[in-house]
Amino acid sequence: MVSTASVGIARGATVGDFVARRPTTTRWSDNDMYGHLNNAVYYQLFDAAINGWIMNETSIDPLTAEALGVVVESGCQYFSQLSFPQTLLVGLRISKLGRSSVTYDLAIFPEKAADTDPIAARGRWVHVYVDRSSRRPVPIPAHLRQLFETVTTD
Amino acid sequence: MVSTASVGIARGATVGDFVARRPTTTRWSDNDMYGHLNNAVYYQLFDAAINGWIMNETSIDPLTAEALGVVVESGCQYFSQLSFPQTLLVGLRISKLGRSSVTYDLAIFPEKAADTDPIAARGRWVHVYVDRSSRRPVPIPAHLRQLFETVTTD
Amino acid sequence: MVSTASVGIARGATVGDFVARRPTTTRWSDNDMYGHLNNAVYYQLFDAAINGWIMNETSIDPLTAEALGVVVESGCQYFSQLSFPQTLLVGLRISKLGRSSVTYDLAIFPEKAADTDPIAARGRWVHVYVDRSSRRPVPIPAHLRQLFETVTTD
Amino acid sequence: MVSTASVGIARGATVGDFVARRPTTTRWSDNDMYGHLNNAVYYQLFDAAINGWIMNETSIDPLTAEALGVVVESGCQYFSQLSFPQTLLVGLRISKLGRSSVTYDLAIFPEKAADTDPIAARGRWVHVYVDRSSRRPVPIPAHLRQLFETVTTD
Image (cartoon, rainbow over all chains, first blue to last red; front, side):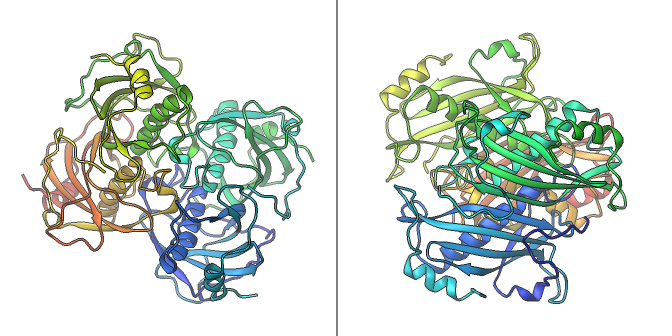
């Protein structure tokens, strides 16, 4: 794939910039007619990394939690191709931690990439915590904020 | 869902701003545990609208075309919830038409929305045309450029 | 695609055998590397047709309903290829209506197929109604049974 | 989930019956509104396991191979619930190896299941090898047949 002018996402990141990582396998159905991961799949992988991390580190149950993190904005830049059957890593960190909102800085790269390798794709992802019923913003629950602070870079 | 400060995508658009529209049905599997369309689904819908429009209007075969439009950047802002079993419309127009690249301005809204209704989500999508083999940028093929010009707003 | 010996699913059905139909659009991401709808997509379409029909005809809310229809068995035979950007129809009828279980007989074919055309794929699908909490079988709720009887062929 | 009378798929299998296994991660978007893996996802996992195994063990390129394995029939029985963020294993073996067709016997279970545990789901999957252009059946290529024989149980 080709380079593109960056819009709101800084270029030049390398694998080593992303210390918190979660592995993900790919699927035959992830590859589209061009033989590479369809662009929408990256968002499934970001979602799995963020929520898998939160669910593994806390006791949150998405079916009953009172505060839900809903996506109000997402974005991705694609720097190089990835394709099934590669195993990948999703790197995550938090670039901005607000009262109700969390902005994730995400990266995807092959499992065996070296720390000095460029990342293959970079994502931006904003969760706003809302009340399950009213869907109005609420403060990030304390135990989540505590977790988020461990990967916040700002 | 909640409002969010706009990042690179203008707010305030209404359904009537998007004249070129393609219908899309939703699927049970599009709804996630929160009972609304998963954020990654929006990108599947954008992709279907753009490529369906191109394939219906031209004779392009994605399995053999020499110039491929690959996604180098995508993004979405989510303004209000959508969910299965709604039928939706994807509105599309082109905000920037370059030598090799096309920047789409996309919207999603319910099939029965009025022209003055706000859109439910807004997308940004950059295709760069590349050679099938080398994956290096090439000029947008003439018959595609001709089609693209019919929905270009800049 | 090729014929195959039938295993538990009768061959020879035509479009006209399926009177109850629901339209579905396809997506770029539905096509796999072979340029046709990935086999798993057919199950998403069956699911959308069954649940979309039930949700449109009744007032059921999947997030709160006490009795859930969970899939205990599914199957599909693929007779001819379908691919994005085709618009398709999913035909549905019920071949067996039990106390807790419903067996659907499903078909997929192009929107413009004639009644005498063979169907492109045939599905078999068993829902068992269970209690939301215990996940133990319960009788099919009366208003659903009433709906189901309208398309039962046995 | 509940038991169901077996239709063409033998019950009672345990994890230990499936020696050839491939790991798979799950995704937030795999869970549907009932909080468990959507039934169509199982087919994505079967597909990934079969094709990932073939692609890792041979030098086949799905975009250029002359003989394609297309799915003519698939089926699954769901015995117990699985859900994101579980890591799973897909077990595979071949129950019937024909001239052009291969019938897979598949299982899904949690990564940490013991050999004596029952499997969570069982799949049946028939690939027929066809010529890329004509899509007519061809003999299974010799190097694939050699691979297939290593996991054939009949």
